[in-house]
Image 1 (cartoon, rainbow, N blue to C red):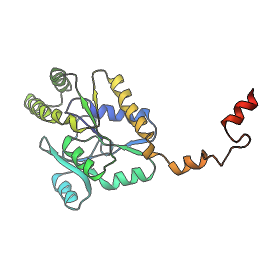
Image 2 (spheres, rainbow, N blue to C red):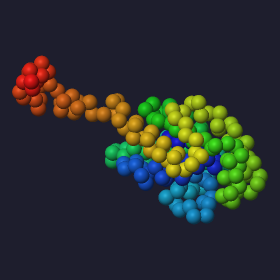
Image 3 (cartoon, one colour):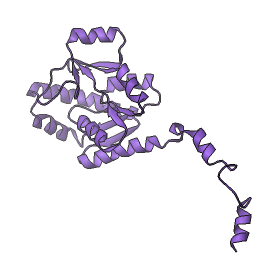
Image 4 (cartoon, rainbow, N blue to C red):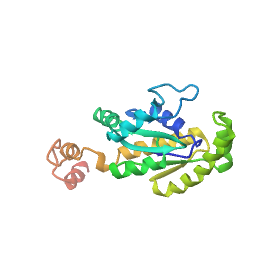
Length: 213
């Protein structure tokens, strides 16, 4: 799960992650926010009206949901189940409220927080994307200060100063997590490397040393 204040680059990093690491898929959130220029239905978000969103929430269809900057966002439980059932890891681009809900429901989830190099850089990025008026940028910066305080509750923190470096760090976290012993098929490993299978010849290391002399 990846969280960050608006403008820190988490959405771009999550997209890049799915392009360079095999077997990882994005979860496409539902939102009541209006599409920005270039955003596509079903690719960036599922865009719905508030009535539809709240009806889905009341039916328990979201594993997490939150109101952010006056709009609702939510993650479909069915979508996550379908993606994981097909053998994929799932990356969620969610805010700090949603991350808390995910951590409670999925204890094995891994939380990554993306930090900007500084608040000044964050402001430059928000202004530079020219998608929000000045008053909205101001509100996002105020909220960012509160969100950044939550970084201590995450498993990893990445400072997105240089995109390529940050992306490699994010990919490294995914690859390392896949190699954890609690995620491996331990029965298969024990069977393949047991002392009674696949070994013939010397009974022990001492026999090997003697015969090699």
